[in-house]
Length: 141
Image (cartoon, rainbow, N blue to C red):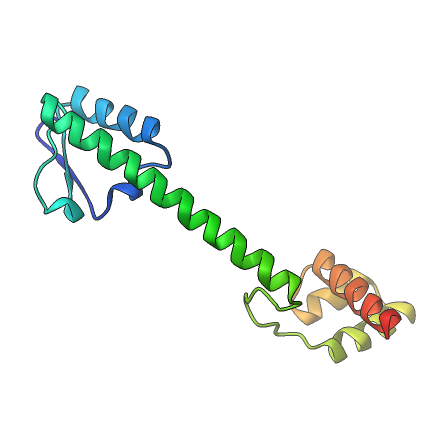
């Protein structure tokens, strides 16, 4: 709205690309709203002035570069962990492999897979995926 100011901590939080950030800044300016980026010293960035527009464009380009460098580092780290056979983290499993094995036996004995999965607190798709992964591990041994 007219006279409002959008406050963000870092410029890379505004958008993913320089072009995206510039179009967003134009949209703010057309609505009469200001933009304040805290990591630029906390001053208002007035994109209506030539100097403010230049500063914003340069900082947006640097923010995009920083974002791409971070993404590259994360991708490299994931690839290295996979090559080393390490896990990628994530949420710890609540249901153990032993519980999955027992559940598979129940399904083989005629229990409905949907009910067995529900009793374990997981979806049927997750139950099937975990069952296949466990069977694959046992075949590898």
